[in-house]
Image (tube, rainbow, N blue to C red; front, side, top):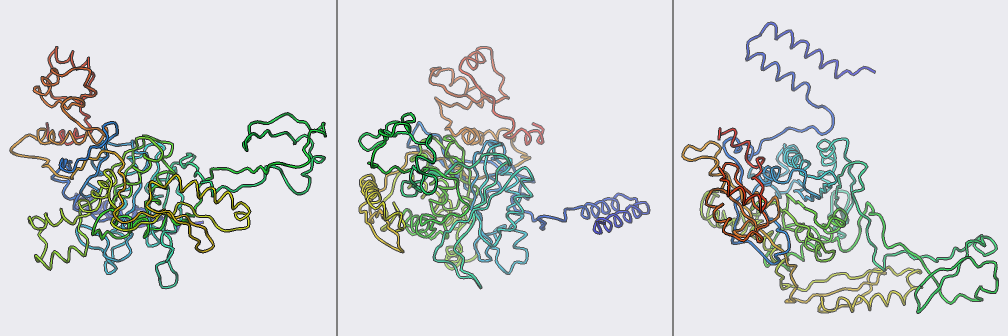
Length: 603
């Protein structure tokens, strides 16, 4: 079958080659080559018009760096690794993470803007709405460059998770296929997050999606543990046709029971009819307490209003953040990937309300381990507060002190993400009554036959959770028995002791005239080492030696208290100094941090 498109393209390229012979000047040849390249561009799969971003334009003359906001540092457990919240354009953050975490991330979870056509996201500081005829290509261009870097950050067995709704589901799946390639597989999970529904033109939308992407042939997703009430019990002994002793004599063995518990099994005794009891004293059932994850998640705990919006409003006074995920949706996604990875590194570069950080700390508390997170989010002000600013002060000048102060007060990172993580770590008082479903059991013939077991489960849960809730109630709704834990307003919630550093994205000139670039970059090396190793650089335990004076100070310390040293490769080290460094152990500051930039600056 002839490829007509290829035939036409080859004809046009052949015609251009003829024109090159007639117009061989450099300008014409470059123009012809550009046309040929365009003709050879991909025509199948995800095709969109690429758009530049301000970050890329600024990269021409500036180098991205991190600076720590030490006023927001939280230290609650010296034995735990450090977590990081990075404020700034996430593309700028990702460029730096490529230097510190290439091939090191276990799980990336993102919840990007859904591109609904409403004013919910900005591209180059302007809102993108339905009137923007390029809104889909802008969204894809924004997603593509970030996803391409994200792939480089994943470990070989790492998993990329993208939350999305119906507006960009099809294009996101194609984009993932394009970025990750044929060696990766994607599974699309349906999550019922809004059982009340959002009315569309023809359907009421009650769900969104979580796309899990991982290498083919990889067992990337753990099994889901079932609670006692979810286990499907069935009789140990077969029933029905051919289930009598005379049908399968060799399949009957004694089971020894003591104090209501199975304590052992015996040998085949079917030949001794006198051994068999006339009547069973126990009904023995079997059931699995684990199961593979299903592709539809439909549970009350995934309700984004109850366990997202209401939770965050209870944690942060006057918070008007739109559409936060249910904490349990994100927890389940992370659990599926990192349950058996107690030291996992988890990245979210669309961190928003900080649910990923909250869920990571919950996992450490419930499962043990020392997982740590890196959250990247901008500090944009929402449309409501932006209008309020314009009404009060007039048009926005991004460099004015008034706008900078306004962003500090109402920006996402400073007023939502950080306070939420701070409350998670230090504890908080609920600002309103909050309900949590502790148990849900459908009233079926099977469950009613085991009502004593259900009641026992209820009492067990009530006893176990009595100190965590101010009230626990049993209610019946929609033919379901529910056990609700209620936290009354002003109830104190215990924090999850952890550590947090707050970084801000910044810039430094690529070709400074009045100072050496190496000196400027040395001011930001500390943040890179801390981020890469999830530690804190200090003056006694983890040392950064940038000059001879730093080495002199280090040599006065007790060697046994030093754990790590990073050394500037430009320092000329003396014999005694090198002896000291070799005795305690040291590493050179990695060249991949800013080596290329220094080379370009001829330093």
